[in-house]
Amino acid sequence: MEPEPRISYKLLRKINPVAARLAVLEYLKTNGNISLCARVFGINRCVVYSILAKQKSGNLSDLSKRPHSQPQKTALSIEDKVIEVKNKTRYGPKRLSLYLQDFENLAVPAGTIRHILKRNKDKITYLKHYSCRKRIPREFIDWYSAKPFEIVQIDLKEIRDRKALSKDQIFHLDCFDVPNYQWGAIDVNSRFKLIGYSREKTWTNGLFWYLWVISWLRTHGVENEIVFTVDNGEEFGGRSWMKIKELRTLIKAFNCRLIQNHKGHFEENAHLERSHRTDDDEFYIPRCFEIKGEKSLCDEGANYIYYYNNLRRHSSLNYQTPFNFLKQQLPNLDDHIKYVLPIMLDKVAVDLGPWSGYNVLAQNQNYCGLINVFTPPASFVRVNV
Image 1 (tube, rainbow, N blue to C red):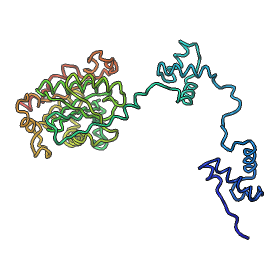
Image 2: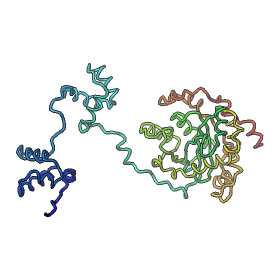
Image 3: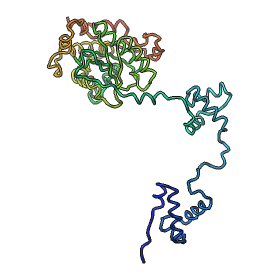
Image 4: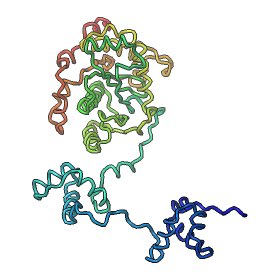
């Protein structure tokens, strides 16, 4: 007895349900045995009977799984009203629910609105902002031909890095309530670096860090256009098109531009990322136990950044210091630019002003006073004098 041929009905149905049912019907035309047909296709006889019933009805395609009776379904008039208000206000489900209750006298839960919007995507007509943003390619940045302060990389570093500091060092920083965030800006050409500190990683502090870097460079003789390259962290604008748009408008008045790196591509801020390792090896690891609070952090940070910019020889600069390398190209640059003062951003960001209302977001009360922020620490003066 020859073995019966086997055809996988389930596999055919995944490819094309109508074609799978037609194959069963064609087999029944040559052999009307329903039991044999079921064995050949690897299905039950009831499936064969349902295919024959579909043939009689004249429709071999899959039917909708929606129940015939939906007594709890939202009325079409209410769905149309939800879509209309959505296109008008662009609100999310929760705000739409409140809007309908206040202005349309309709009580529609936010969960119901979410389902209505999901099954009526084709009726939402307004243009979504993020869809346009994805089409904009990142501008090419040529590091090797950049002149001093033409390209400045900005990033944020956590001081309590578990890959660098020991548990005892981290415990020491916690005991003295040392701020955890170091803000950095580095010139790609000369490796000249500015640093600041904060307790909070917020957009408000990020906004002030932009302004602080611009003001420091402009007041010390840097006149060319500055291009900032940053990652997609929320503290630098992140995915908020509104923040990025307003930030670009603001810094454009200072002859500056902003370029966001690709998400997850740390190598596009390679110079600053590499300097973070130097910060750990030459500052935080050997000097961690000397840091005992905010003022101590500012003092130690001022000494370190002076060493980094004016005393430390960099192999990438042919073993010159960043400041000397900078002065060779810009001899008229103000010499006081080398006395970089680490700034505590939390308090100053609150006093930034009502620009777009972002100042109200910085509510941290643990900060150094403005006098301590802008006054050079005593140890810094002794070292450099």
